[in-house]
Length: 230
Image 1 (cartoon, rainbow, N blue to C red):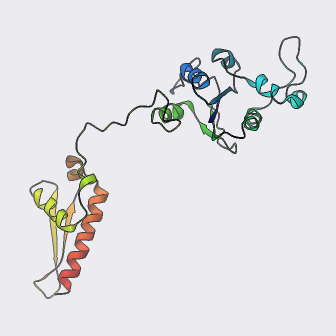
Image 2 (cartoon, one colour; image 1 turned 60 degrees about the horizontal axis):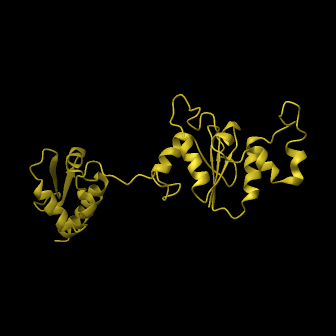
Image 3 (tube, helix red, strand yellow; image 1 turned 90 degrees about the vertical axis):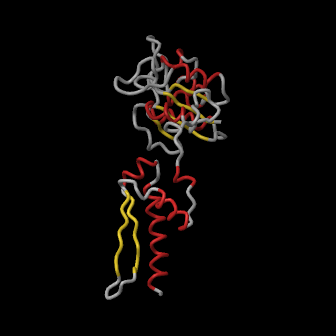
């Protein structure tokens, strides 16, 4: 089970940040009522009513012996004499769920310093949910998709140097391909042969430059050892 603590303003889409993505109110309701997770409102308490989730008064109410410490008396206005601060609210929530697997707070304020809690801004939380990083079973998780369905050659190319040479020969006429050779001093023998495959080949052929370079170096190292030992 994960415990979620949601701020409202500049976090949920009932009052979104003017320049960033907000968490849909529907998501907060779903997490609270359709999953086994625990969900609380820790910011503007309007969210407690909008999402039908426990707010700060409910949280303190479950710490009956500490009521006076955190809230004090109720005023004629309907408000309380005092209210626990944001970080104190998170501590009170954590005390209620010692068995929880994870604690996640979503707030436009930076609460990353609160021990035991993983903090997200709304615009970080939404993509994390869609990527399945929060809970892979949530209905908003999107299937992984490719960048157009083109094959990733670097992902299936064997590491054997002979296969690498075969690959280079296949694309020998490519404009980005350039073989470079050095001759050992006072000798007509090749001491090494280095193939340079510049960025454009990797881009046009959908290959990983770093993987190609590593394999090229391995091939060159093998070639130099063999040539210089003759």
